[in-house]
Image (cartoon, rainbow, N blue to C red; front, side, top):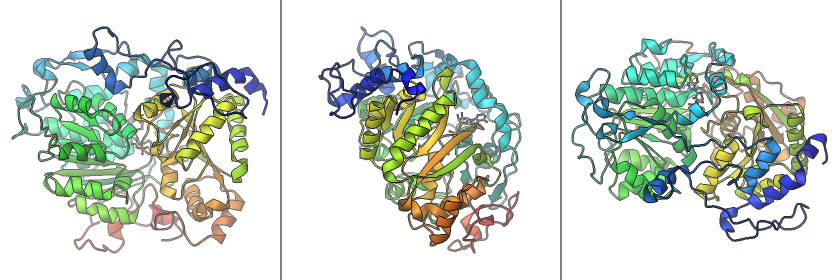
Length: 633
Ligand SMILES: Nc1ncnc2c1ncn2[C@@H]1O[C@H](COP(=O)(O)OP(=O)(O)OP(=O)(O)O)[C@@H](O)[C@H]1O
């Protein structure tokens, strides 16, 4: 499909590089020059190239080999994979690789390590005060274009969150705050908020932080990209710093660690991201934040843990493994946060979570503080979740008129065999329209497909046609997944083809377009997928390819789009009318939940016994909440 735009890309060179870039880890010794860009012959083997070292191994490599004095940088042009070279050629530059070589180093925790804002008994505890240098978690941010960073966090669109309806139900709901200065997070955390360039709290932060700081359990539902990570991290960090020093924890160097807070998330990449964020928020507090997740060498993670763990971020599988080896005890956990909580309690994860939370040594609900966060909370999951909570507050932030208006949603009727050419048209169009991505590069496009094979096949096809693409899915090695994400994030490879493994939580600035090449079966999955754009007050575009195979989603999709003030095509409305039997997936209420869904305890207190919903603030009835417009309430 020739065009001025594709011509300018020297597509044959790009496609060749793309082809080379394919699953290189599987073909380490192959001939890099065996290039075919005709699209008709099998993809050539990948070239041999310098082994990629993921971030979590770089330090180990440094420590283990004096001959490697600098941390391994994200590949530059000289060392980049062909796939990245393709991105560079296509995107007009290779500056996307953020050098980590100049990673900054923070001051020693020294005697100030562990000092709480109001409780100096923390000093002298383990942590950075032990003489280790705390790496500066803001180093990468500092390297980023400062203007860009400011735009991200203080852009005018952030005001779009101001009018969001909020519902909080439960007994004695603490009132919200307006500014970070009104709440005692402690001087270190306040300083870190400034370093993050957060000028004012987002609505979910305004409401959730006081609830958690008051010691209450919380189930919070707020839009994608609205700052939920900080909403659960700040109270955890401040709570630990303000709380009593831990008792009964073994001395440093012990093989079993006793974290005070546990943050669980469903994917490795999301856990890594939460870890990065939490380290920023806890910088110079003396608190140790450690992440453990599958697919990466356990020894390295064990070494990290041996240096002390106060806040443990984990995926359930690796955590279970470490608990079985008696390397982690949850007996001292004061704070438990489940990010993407509805996913964590969905069929796939629920038994594992139940085991971790209920059958090991974690203090019971009521003895610990529990926070559940997600953008979606189906009722049956809320019902399940109450087992993990004690006298909790349900918080729902946003629905109509909320930040999701920032995502323009479009639905195109596309038969399966036409999807690829439609995709090509969309990408051509957005590039010819001059959409801008990172530092003048092409905008980032995230394409969701249903299967891992489908992801590989589409990535291959895109590359063959001159579109630098990479892919992330469960069959790729962890190294490949991380490399793909980094290459996409930096703009070196501006198209990422993904399965649902990338649907939740990932915060990738400058994703301007999410394309549902294959629609999910569940409307909540759709909500999370499109939420990869339009984050932190910025606008975004989401396009879905719809055909007869997606008929069961029509009703929920129409409702969702109408709630978000989107233009719904007539043909989709007709589909929805014809298929008004529900859909939305997974046997849940048709259409699943909504961001800003209702507290299920208000549905007649089924199974709850006690009286709830008496307190709270904000609208508490049909004036808002998913029920207002829903076809089912
Ligand atoms: N108070 C704030 N001011 C400015 N930016 C903020 C603020 N709080 C969070 N952010 C930024 O907003 C972005 C989205 O935050 P975050 O990833 O926590 O969203 P989320 O609600 O967890 O989204 P998702 O539902 O997709 O997981 C991040 O880049 C974060 O740094």
